[in-house]
Image (tube, rainbow, N blue to C red; front, side):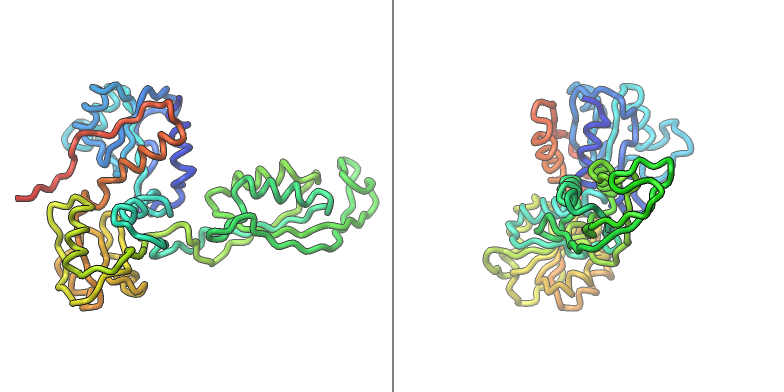
Length: 364
């Protein structure tokens, strides 16, 4: 199996278009045409992880954090990034990363945290805006269902938990084919009036290519009439953070103890206890202080994330319990997420979880 087949599957779940502007997700080292013998899953593709991959016969490393985050002007081994890249190239090991694009999908990093905490009724905390498009096309009535089904098969027509969503209206289309046309209906050089259906449906911009491919393949007309509209709607299946509800409300102390155990945290930095019960919880893997206002606005009783600075704890303003469990701790189960996804899709492909602890922070 080639690296490009594995990366294409990961990107079908976490499209690169969903990564933040500062990020560098994707294939970082190696050729997409490389035949992958086995994959090693990790959080950070450090030099020690590359050593482990070589020892375990894996020529593909799949990481959450991109080892190459900013540009490399020289690669001579002067820091840990350059040393890891050099070792990967020397041993013909490809490195792939799915970072904020995996953070920003409904079934991604935050869903795994929510699962660990036993949260139910989960929703994206801060849904993305501008990721949806509306497709409008016009089709002869007798072929309309064929076109609709092709669009749905390509991924169009999803609104929240509903699929095959569309709006149809009937009317008449008129056109005149030139001498070089190959008309489906009507005659060359004569204006034709055809009973048609106007089909409207929506899709995320990340799948636009496959939706249009399906449209052109299924539509009977030589020249397909269609319009694409950008939408300002929020996209409930993509965005930052997640909220969910505990099965039963807990005291703050009990919740923090459960959190520490569930996330295998060495310690938790948290704001002052407010004497409130915890039922609704907001989470964000990695550095999540930027979502604190959203967590408060959502009505969450607690917000679990990492990398809060000293003064940012004040921003909780006695309205929410903030629990900082550590960056590594909040994302350490991403490896299991990768593993489950790949084994479900490629059951005979060898996938291994790294045994290397790459957490740079130690606790006394």
